[in-house]
Amino acid sequence: MRLAAFDEMLPEISGLRKPYSAYDRWLKEQDPARLTEKMQDAERVFRKTGITFAVYGEQEASERLIPFDIVPRIISGNEWRRLTQGIEQRVQALNAFLDDIYHRQEILRAGRVPKELIAKNEAFLPEMIGVRPPAGVYTHIIGVDIVRISENEFYVLEDNARTPSGVSYMLENRETMMQLFPELFQQIKVRPVENYPQLLRQSLAAVRPQSTKGAPTIAVLTPGSFNSAYFEHAFLADQMGVQLVEGQDLRVVDGHVAMRTTEGYKQIDVLYRRVDDSFLDPLTFRPDSVLGVPGIMDVYRAGNITIANAPGTGIADDKAIYSYMPEIVEFYTGRKAILGNIPTWRCSEPDSLKYVLEHIHELVVKEVHGSGGYGMLVGPAATKKECEDFSKKLAAKPSNYIAQPTLALSTCPILTDKGLAPRHVDLRPYVLVSDRIQIVPGGLTRVALKEGSLVVNSSQGGGTKDTWVLDD
Image (cartoon, rainbow, N blue to C red; front, side, top):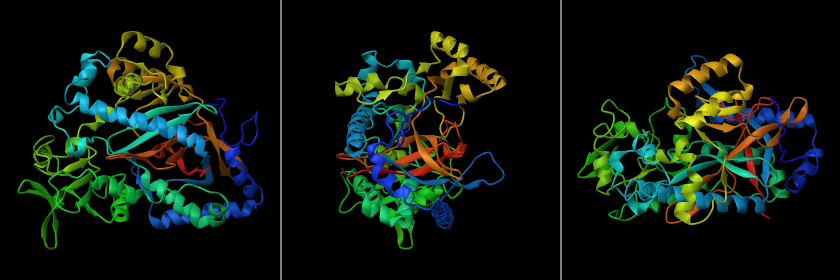
């Protein structure tokens, strides 16, 4: 499948774009053999560091190395300023939306979002109704997936308000590039990302419970070493200088959550959890869960611990809710959304379902709770039988799906055996929310390494790039 796409480095009409000018001069001076060696060096660095992810459902090679491309994606300072304005507006709206639906539900009463879309949504937690998190923050860490269509057109592909992953790859990509090409960072002023762990720790500390005395104790809760993102959990805990804990390490003591140490149990004030809602507390949610902490929701409701992100935030990254984000942004901010949505058909609506079924070979169809590129169909790249089979699933449970047009995502060059070649990319900037909003300058660029592919997810064969925001 080939789509006419805007190339961020070398558009066909205008030629080399200004953000890439200094890099292009450097690149033309390089021996291709040296660049190939550097690619191999990068792979060795990643393998030695143990930067892997798990692929569920495959018996062989369940631990994989994420492919890394050494050609950076470069964003000008002006482009970044525009993006951050849109991201900040969106994040403010998401937090206001979450506070509203778990309290007054004004947006539902105003008819801007259908009540049944909330009430019947498995990501909505009735247990959070009336609960206000410490400092009033629901989404402490957000990943906003952004795609580019042309020189000046950026759209939000989806919001990741539960437990956005991938930030460790952003950090390792930058460190690897600085090791391989230190001269580039002397020649080109690139804004830093390596202070993210410190910003994350400061941001989490700023939303500690009011009852906390002195410096708060922070910990990262992981499901364990078999989780696909375990490397990231351990990496972030280490970089922040906090404890990495599992549910079995924690218990409720005197109305607080405490972790087991060699000197007895120590109270935790802020828990950065990478465990899904349903596994968080077996006394409140799934009784068979061994990953969470019995009674933690009682401690949370009493205001004695901060859980980041708050339970119930998954409703904000539901893909059916996504289709209402322009209305949500305007409702809570009083302004039109700076960053637009991709047009979306809600298959729960009969007219939309009819259109999607008739045009399924042209569309991208996604599960509303899906992630990682699973449970989706890229119509133009699918066979006739795949489209027919997916249509049956869609007709059987239409409320489980949304559909979007197949967009010509922008491309960036990657280094191949035959030289530079364009590949489709997206961008996940990371946002920290506490008493202020901080957006790390760059984020994770994911790239579809297969020629013509639009699927950038690492679980589906995608890779990553270092993302440079120029300090201009």
